[in-house]
Length: 227
Image 1 (cartoon, rainbow, N blue to C red):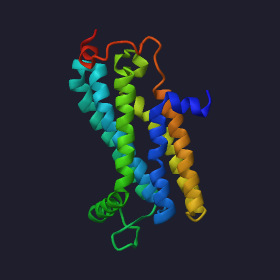
Image 2: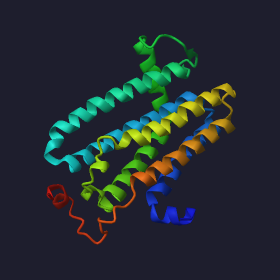
Image 3: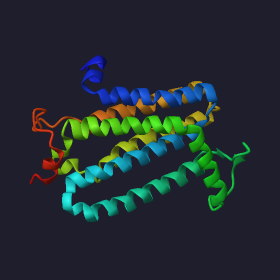
Image 4: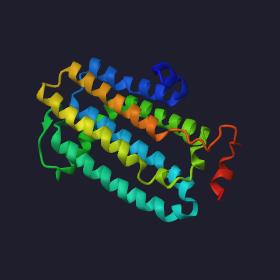
């Protein structure tokens, strides 16, 4: 399928590409380095995890009473360890602008620096969140992915494959960019590579099940109770 055909048949991919342009603008015009970009995409991972909760409810139905808390604890632990890893791997800065090289146990300074980055990146965070929300309603609700009962489509593990691959690209690419001196062109190339990997993962995740006709009644409640 051509690029135009892919974008036409997957409007959420177009929205995803547009959303990822905002970090590019911040890199080119606001002089961001590696850490805030990797942190931004860590936040994007958190957004993906939050939007996975309603998918778990639709898929597991009444069993979601136990499944959702387990996912929150499991995914939350994964996110915490990942955050500690990227903080240890990439240098971050404090409010005054100095590089933070202290221990992770110095939680007050670490949290203050992270909130500084959230304040800087809030537009990119909001746009990325909107792109994933758009994808949720376009694909999961609009294309009736909630009707898919295939065990291989269990939302419990779906975020991990996409997230792990995407962040492996970011971590390896970010390390290379750091060695190159964190030049804007290298950072731009890192974002492009992340977007390409993300698009492929997005398309694979949302491949339409032939058994789910678009002519079916869009009754979400009926889909929830359907046995």
